[in-house]
Length: 434
Image (cartoon, rainbow, N blue to C red; front, side, top):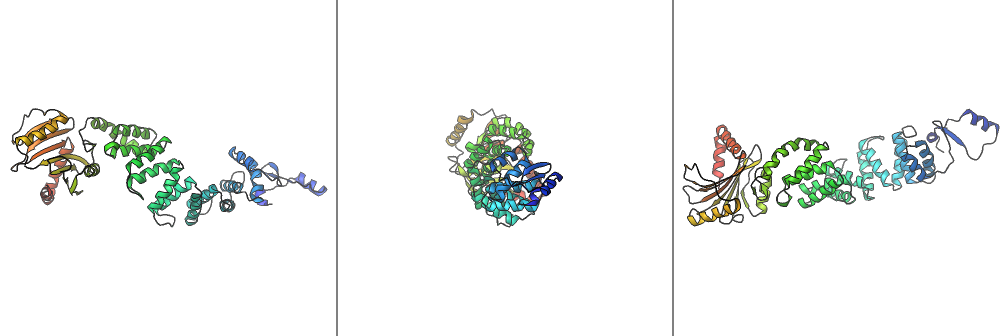
């Protein structure tokens, strides 16, 4: 029997008895003041119950026989934990690794994961990341969800001596999520949102975030809120986004705390904003509009991040138009203007078609009080967007424009500063128009 495990200190009364008479078949030992029978076979079930009650000396007595004599992997696993944490017996990293390794070798997936975790972090036993991966893999093969999640992150980072493999990371994360491991469900949402190891699928991202939110994952509430704010079409949902962001902020999520104040201010603007391509213009980003314009049939002619305008062939977006120019404030990354061109449309009949299309959607135009250029035909003013129908000059085109209050002036100011600093940039920008 392992003398080190028992930590025996034989009391004088037992020594006297042993010297005076023949020993009995069963012997007792005193460990930390507790007396128990070292020949007791033990019960793993009773040991686990004692361990959960933090009755560590009792659990030691129950585990040692099955671990040593019967090679029971559950008992071996618990002995490894107890040596690692100094529970009921002194901390001993050698014994911790020995028992955990025996349990892991005998197929206990909890021991395989725990051994991998300790080796990975260098806690309780000496650090060995390469060996850690071996045990994580064995536990993952045994459907241990946390091991699958951990190994997925290792493949995603390309750490522990493993080459980065996004596809393998995806497969492992899916396996963990299928077992309803909440952290994996949240992580899998990011995989589908950003296309890690797979193509982007925002509907799947939403579903996995929702699964994690249902289990109370605070980070998933924040991620789902951002998905609803950055999404387009049916996925753009600022009202639900606000509720989720508020919950995450109240739970202490640092990014949510920073963003909720701005979102509170934006909410009223969102509710009253003109919407194009499924996105409110008052908060639309360049990435959002680029994605949605092309989804709805726009063909990119120029998309350049360091210039203010993106240009599209718009024939499949709006009947009668041939060009769409979307201007942005570069500093704010927000849409500033949207303008359609209708070539050779400067005739009464064509103008009426465009005018009727707008009043059907937004009502009649406001009265024009200032039209010195003679180009402006109609004007609609809303809380944060102005809509205009203008004549082209000297060409015969008509232009339908949406100007976002604040962002439009910011774009003009940025262009003016650029013109003063580098006239060539402003000239290049103008030359690229249409």
